[in-house]
Amino acid sequence: MRLSQFLTEDVNVHLYHIEEDIIRNGLVGAKSAVRYLSGLVDMLGGSSNATVRATVKWDGAPAIVCGKDPLNGKFFVGTKAVFNSKIPKVNYTFADIDKNHPDGGLNKKLKYAHRYLEKLTIPGIVQGDLMFTPGDLKPERIDDEPFITFTPNTITYAVQKNSKLYKQVTTAKIGIVFHTAYEGDSLDNMNATFGVDVSNFGGDGSVWYDDAYYKDASGVTFTENEVRVLKTSIAQLDGLADRVPMPLWMKLSTNKEFVQYMLQFINKMVRGGKLVQEPKQMMQKYLNYYRDVQAQAKEKLKTDKAKDKRDQMVAIMGKLFAENQQGVEDIIKIHNQTVILKNQILKKINSVQATKQFIKTDQGYKVTNPEGYVAIDSDGQAVKLVDRLDFSRANLNAQKQWAAE
Image 1 (cartoon, one colour):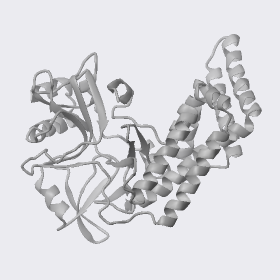
Image 2: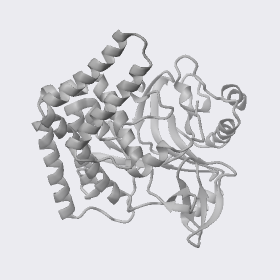
Image 3: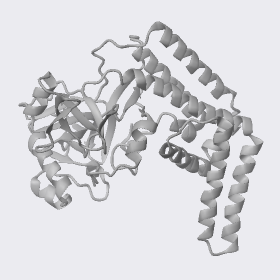
């Protein structure tokens, strides 16, 4: 995947939710969802022929890019800003960090990263999520059990005392989970690949690091019957995608108004705590939402011509849905069924966790699952798997600690 394809306006690497691809890319997105879901079921069913792997999305911050600059061989650390084509912020020294990132919190984190990550034998350039630095580890008792905890972003990770991982974490100065590798002749001409092999990174114990690949040490997999039931549901999803007329798939996936506001509408539903609804009802709620957004925009306009254009846009969207009601409902059903199947898969993956994870509330700690996962196919393409009514809802309203510029 070319770097220009891999990066978006988001500070960190941005991946689309598996169900979002259906809205963005129409039939291609629907077929992609089917392929990922089927591959994940194979993976969790223990198949040796699985074409999809999963990495865990650790909720670290800030995102760290590090390695040796291919042009000069010097070690550097930075954020995604190292790839900025106009003003790349590459930090070879502490002085560079002071110049490029003067703000206290990020400045301090980057200096710790530079000091300790330089000790690793990192081939090429990699990206990881910083999990902790000196002062971030806190001994706590949760449900009357002793843990060491760290909260890099939204999730609090808790490692049980006297475990093997506990010794590794408490001995280390910093912790990081690597998930992306970059290759190229220069920082402005890089190819990005999901997944990092950390087996030869070495080190002296001052850095606790890991790759992000999902590891099942428990043997908890789907049974043959569970695989059969899920595969049947996925096949039905595939058949429903074929039933939607191709012209409608094309009309909607190329309609910027539909794509933009449908994705905004879905985020609104996530915030409201109910993502999956009956398709006909969801279609009408979207039309109401679209009408309200255009009405609000219309109030700020001065000319009658501009106001009339907003009314026309609402009328055109309403006509499109009215003339293709069954097809639109089927597309919404495909989106919703993808969410349901994804969450069934997430439930199985979440049954195996290396660390206990919590979200802090006013009443104390609440057990939570990982932020989510990334499903990677054999071509290196990837989508995000997140329980949006669990983590995304909390994250949409969470106060971010880092602006990794």
